[in-house]
Length: 396
Ligand SMILES: NC(=O)c1ccc[n+]([C@@H]2O[C@H](COP(=O)([O-])OP(=O)(O)OC[C@H]3O[C@@H](n4cnc5c(N)ncnc54)[C@H](OP(=O)(O)O)[C@@H]3O)[C@@H](O)[C@H]2O)c1
Figure 1 (cartoon, rainbow, N blue to C red):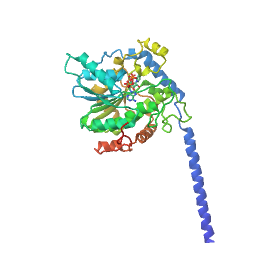
Figure 2: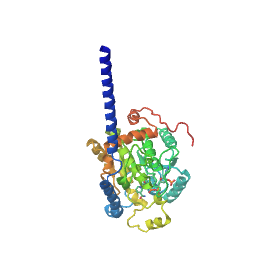
Figure 3: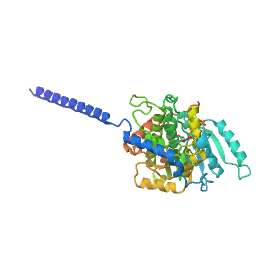
Figure 4: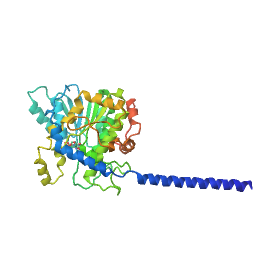
């Protein structure tokens, strides 16, 4: 009798457990269905208004800026500029070098960079000391290459004062492509690889402190949306277009930078800033049809030259007030990192970038994708060595 009572109790417990787990499953499913799968149309419309506003009024908004923008003394700075063979990055590297900084051009085509240095040295000769500028190879489509670059730079045991993550792609109209690491190319070049580079270079940034990480972002992040369960944009939830790939990668960069900004204590002296360069006439439009490229060149009044487009990044990289502003945001526990618009004024990044829960999920997902442990920043700040899944003895 006792046996049958206890087994009936057992059964009841089991049934209750099953019911609970069924309820839990239903709740999870409901949450999943309720979860936002894309930008709401009001946010989407507002995002496009920002883009159009920038396109039409950037010149008026930036009319208070000189061109080129005057820089404070930079003789003591060492700056890495990724993607400095073309467009905005090329201008940034040249102006920093001509103002006396030590510049490392981090590029995938070292021959093109060496030719540029030769040209700049010739143009500069007789104007002062030769430019202090060098080339290191970096291909953001290969995470192995990113690790090799960071290891080679850190091995110098020298300081890094400014890392400018400028290189980027917007493969307009092209079909979806994946890197050899298996990641959608916009995601890898515009977000994953710069994120990995920023973290791996922390030991050098610590040596250079006060130092800065500047991410050349875009007003297009206002129309971006990040789904951490579909970073590669392969589910049927969202159809891939280069616009979706580009805008999502730029939003991912703002969200990742916001978490990094919070994880770096004020005492570290390292600040993270995202900037919008404006709408700039560069090679970024290289994939547009010849007709559209011609039209692009016909509207110079609205579109910035690369020199004009370099101003917000150069300001973010060198202005003495920028660290104070970043520290203020930290003290206020502001959910996003500093974002400067093309007119060098602080601005609020997109509403979606304020989604702290998604930002932290994206942080974890990004570290998992680039092969780093979740406590990597804390460990590097402690002076520990941290291994990455990529880079080990690879030679490609
Ligand atoms: N132009 C605009 O209107 C605009 C607007 C908003 C934001 N932005 C952002 O500004 C940044 C600079 O773009 P840009 O307009 O100056 O374009 P760009 O003229 O096409 O320059 C892009 C640079 O990135 C480099 N790059 C591309 N893929 C790379 C890779 N896998 N590894 C290493 N470097 C790579 C390119 O190298 P190669 O020369 O070897 O190709 C080039 O030097 C990008 O982040 C872009 O998203 C531009």
